Image (cartoon, rainbow, N blue to C red; front, side, top):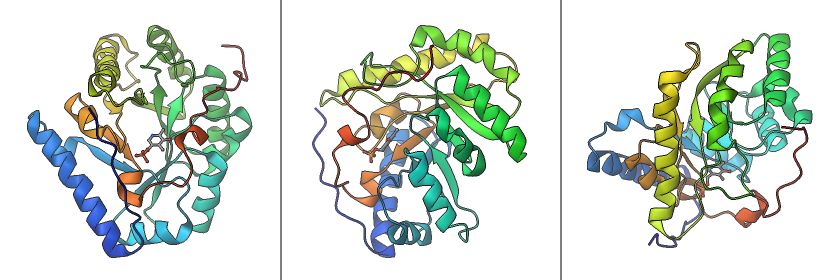
Length: 261
Ligand SMILES: *Cc1c(COP(=O)(O)O)cnc(C)c1O
């Protein structure tokens, strides 16, 4: 069983140094258990709902990447913190077509690509901005109707469409595991993504890289690393518990798709 952890708030640079060091140590331990090198795993701190003041403390403690799942919130923070020169922003949540323009302007990475229409619009906006964007294809590995992401069987056909979009640099796959106290059910989601990645590697267009596996968050990142994660997206274990419940971010009722699939 996965224990229900308590995440204390980090409110000073020292707090952030401590939480970051603790997470890095757990990453290293998980890598060690399965004979991996921890340089293979990128820590992506997730700062959704965290205000500018605390983000600046996290930056002072060494955070250079931030993940945000709501585009307007991310864009607002990016604008307020352009003085933090080597800070990079990753959009990790579902993207609506009317927000594509914002992502094309500021994001360094987009991890939740699951629609050709969004790919096409993003590519067009990126061309206009003279920018390129690293993208991950989001896969629904839990089979839950409330989760975004492509059905695993649809990913191969999808990635064969992506070379048409010159400004998108495909890096790999991303998933959110089932939220479950049962470690084995969580692990199955990660195993599925890893196996899918290995299969696609043989059969992907040459310009599409399948090296990255973004999987694992505060409650399950060690399991994800044991199953091959190369990016772990961690919010609460670094910043502290969020005030809002997760249903706010992952609605129990998914809104209708905006475009025919
Ligand atoms: C919020 C979020 C995370 C991080 O969750 P924590 O419980 O804060 O670690 C990871 N991935 C996505 C897509 C998220 O929205």
